[in-house]
Length: 292
Length: 284
Image 1 (cartoon, each protein chain N blue to C red):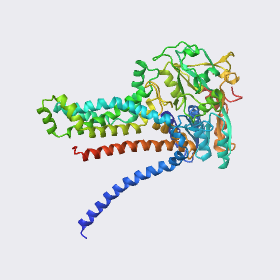
Image 2: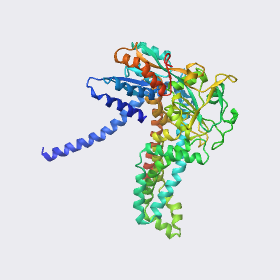
Image 3: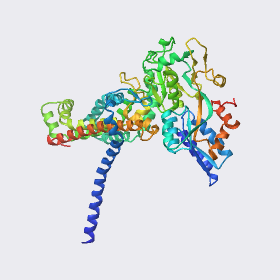
Image 4: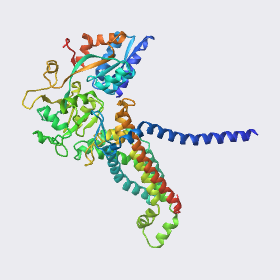
């Protein structure tokens, strides 16, 4: 075998090893979380329907429903803010922005994505909290504060993926719409958005996945009070924040520790479901012949 | 958190002069962490060969560490619980308490809050899951904040000895908390109250500042009320007085014994007082 062939082989094997290691890592993470938490979740099925999270009570109560609803509440609020804004910004960037402004704006938006989440949390505590109190919230650390931060953190993702999806719509669509007498606004609303809908859905779903797993900013800004969500101006507790706040203090291997891993299993399940739906949307996009 | 880490680092670096130095690990109560850091810093000047590394995490964490053998001493703001004792004896560990100081668990409100006194029944009404005091006006207190006058409840994480103590004295051993904003330390409780005029919180008495004040606490609805102070805690008149412990595996020996003897001696107890706590018996 020549040296060149041997070199080629080595590279192939290295690349294969990298690919396999990614799979091994994902499986290992799932096995680790599952080993600590899945059994507990299965033997304590009522966890999912109970809202009482009082791990230090005797006997302890590990209801995670309030935490799950808290997560969905904050994430839902964040999407209500981020999706219209993000899609509008994506349409503007893709269709209306002057060519010479487009790249600088994209760079700035992508820079926004590089802000560490603890810095967002700090902004929530120091800036958004007092601002929300100034406009009528009894306490600035609340669900809306966390949702605003999550919206800001997700916007770059939604805008840049959304813009890509819109730009991938073939120009023939635009030309056809214009030939029928549609204005640019009408073209965007009636032709481009529907044509790019799968790509836009993926942008939103990936943003959603990012929101569900976000921890630090949410822990700092939402007030971390385990309760059923009702009013956006009330504090709330989430799945991620509870794990972050309590895992370091739970005795290793104890019930509380296992219950926190069971929360991890639920969290993993939620993000996995979101990713699967996003994956299905991408496939549908391909099979329907949308490009991009 | 960061100040704690820095303090630990400072202690470790401070002790670097001697090569054969011993590191005594003390872990536990977040209420006691500032006090332990002060003790360890001063102790480093006296006995450079034994550095005391302090970390927080909560009383439960400290006691779990003592049982696991990951700490030499556990700082505890409550007594060890029966199930912890059982876990300890299963591992051949014999937790031995030394009273380091006394603490009055303080109830804090914003300095602009006009509330004069709260009885334990009032606190139960505020903090219990089935309590009905959701607004300050329901307690007869006139207070306006953004969004009306809701009582914003602050508390400590559920592994905190302070949280346990508050539950057992106010809500009863099996009492459930109403939704409470859980904070990782008394300092955080005080910081949030500083920004929110309608908030109430509890924690160690060593954290008073210009921004917050103590509530006068009464054991009964018509009895006299007291604010936590050296005098009221020492005399046992303040309703929320509790000992703060250092737990060791068996009676302290060697360097740990030297540290504890020093800490409960005049110099250590002066630091206890300077940290806003009440000295252990005999040094008040």
